Image 1 (spheres, chains in turn cyan, blue):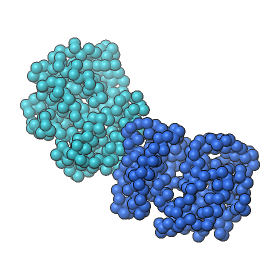
Image 2 (cartoon, helix red, strand yellow):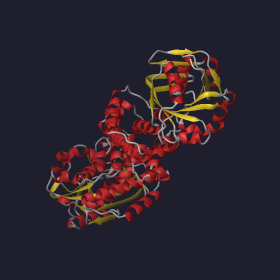
Image 3 (cartoon, chains in turn cyan, brown):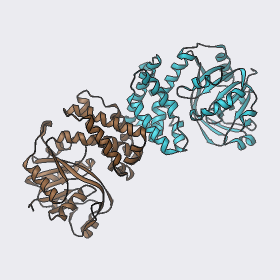
Image 4 (tube, chains in turn cyan, orange):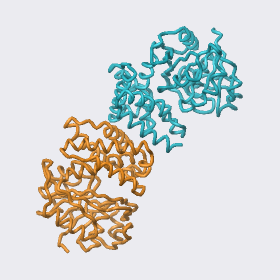
Length: 310
Length: 310
């Protein structure tokens, strides 16, 4: 067992699940908890998982980030819409040679974190169906793997670094599947090829992934949106294959009916991650003169929903 | 006063209003009434109008189209989704030299009517805000003009015909503003430049025209959709100007907040006119190799809503 100390910033569907898995495996984990703090402090975390339910009756829970001890790995599992709190949090929680592991969808957040702290940053894309169903109560429905890659400024590829190997080993020791990528930006665009059609349409149409796939019109639209993501990736000099998109569609067709995080955010009148998942990729593409009309249409519709929903 | 006898097929927001205006002016009008028949037969029609309220205590109401006497002008004011009843109705109601006046949005309905009867067909595009608010009860909120043009097979321009002049004079005698167009297909594409963005977005986002115009993202999307209609019109060899689109946006910004007919159809779980307003223009454009990605996106989203809404 490594001596690495973990902080989990954002104890929701993602941070709550992965943090609980790390603690379950014996790691020293410290959770920043917002609204659920009193309950989590007293009763810990409850995880209903397709791999077996478990409870952690006692966790290190904090509502004040300044009380969290300096950690080797700070896992940022906030909604992208909450990243504005990071400048006040990261410098005090992160050890001098510590690493940030950012578990978030979308584009552009590593650049902002790199402007706050000089430390190593790893991006993690979670392939998981999980929801927070109540205070300190996470339901893990399906999947669970993370694809991790080292962040490299200037859109380069950083390869497989030592801290990437070390942190992925910790997650594997916690029973989690981790895949390593040499190229964070490619991995982010690949994930967008799912998030843009399925988070977007499920939030807009208030539908599950299964409903989107069963209707021939929205299935065709989802694929057209994914293909526009392939065009967008060219703005970052990244190539996604047609085969990648076909596999993505086939895998989604086989998924259990799923309410995406953006759909749940709409249901619960929380801010939608529209800028991270749609706005930033659109801006990157636009800078290179690449038009993504379907994605832009969905972005504009979701901006309307997001404004009206507050 | 002309001797022309009028039949109104579909006594809703459009047919109820214009038919009542014709009867109010002394014309012999016969109304086909579906679900509201008992009430309309007994109590007539009630019109709340921004130009002054009025009531017609007695109207010629029919629930059986075979009882309607042969008419000089058959005004088809059904939803486009109900046009399948026309083959059973038109031949018996229409005098041998009678004319069909089709008050419907979208593309493609005249061709279908021409396949049922050999008579003259006039298309009318209504610029009116009116809703049916109860059985036999129409609320006319704003505007009210009709742009009429003679249908001509093979996408030609028929010019201003005698029957077009005669029928428009009847409507003008009823106090209605009528504008004549030499070119029905151009007029239909011009109307689509409003219906596609505003009916579509208002139904999808459950919003009024004012909400769409007030949000910068949806106002920009509405204009982008209208500009795609300009591209689509080229498939019919029709040219809409940039100035036309600017005026359309400026006029819509000044309109009172309005729930479009498609928004109300969604609210009331009625079939949406998606094929007439979106599907047919998209097919016409596709045949000429013209891609309309934003309109197609909205079409696919509305098809999903329409299917789920039944």
